[in-house]
Length: 114
Image 1: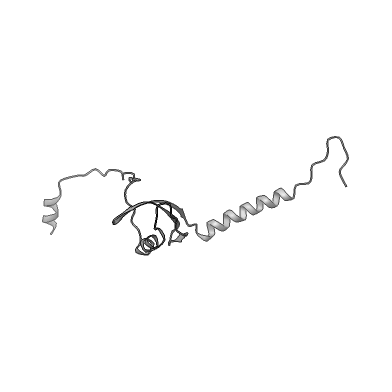
Image 2: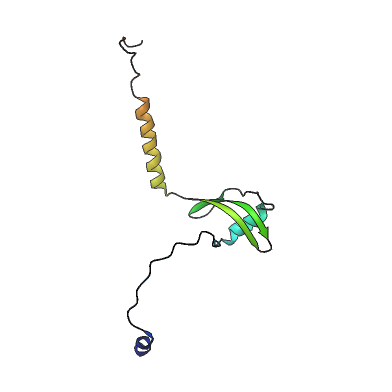
């Protein structure tokens, strides 16, 4: 087996960096998502409900359909894990709280309002 591997090896190889995916290439869809698209998208311009996947939320709009091929626009939003989401919400709430606690501005040259 080792001899076979040595025979197939042609020497050192250079790894090439991964190419950027073609934005016009077809996207793989889960069968469940494909079933929803088939059910909800009947005419160009139709939009799906918000679809929840394990790692993202998606919405699709039908551009055109011909036979087995569909052209759609897709808006995909990655899900955040709870800790990341909660940290952002907590920080935003703290910012709002700090802004609400600022004392009101005094009129120029005047006494504080009562």
